[in-house]
Image (cartoon, rainbow, N blue to C red; front, side, top):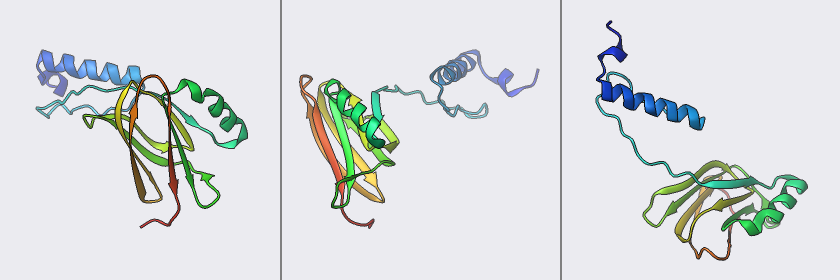
Length: 153
């Protein structure tokens, strides 16, 4: 038997099998190391529960009703009339700089279920990035607003 899988050592095949099974179980398209590679990097994955939406009156009303149950509530808008925006690139990191939430289509309202602690939130829309530092106390929720007024740089 001269296949690439047969040339792998048993521990490596087990590791790749575990990674593949995990990726399938999570429904994620996780690229796995190819057989000829000698390094496989495995790191912890933090899973954050979030609620994203608010487009249209019905969704906006549902989001506003649910708001009290979410520790971090982010709202994205633009222009003079505070028009809601979606398709925001969002990155939330913890105090150590580790990503805890990353979305490429956030907004107009995004809520995150995060434990007490300090977080940095970066939101990009039309080429402009805004950053906020926020501390969650674990008791009350925080509203964080992002508003873009100008054109992309």
